[in-house]
Image (cartoon, rainbow, N blue to C red; front, top):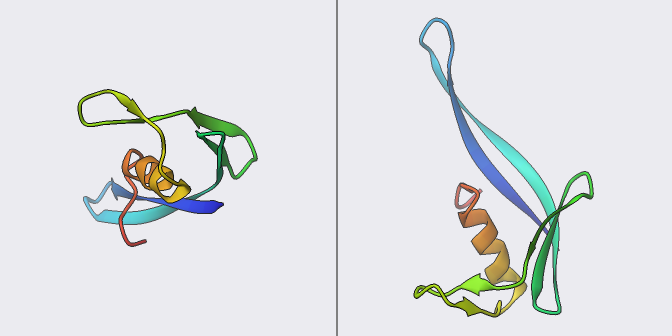
Length: 82
């Protein structure tokens, strides 16, 4: 499944002007035998996450691919709604 992470990058130029640019990163992922695997746009495997963490710190199985994608986006400063 394909998904994106959009990050806001704020920069200030030499004159003090502040600009914000959204950078979009494209990924492909699968949930394979309970492990969440993510590849970047260069087709390099960048993450294998076999579980999610429960609030008490224990390990739980992923419920579905959408849950795993949301976890990845939330942990990579994704701009919600983009």
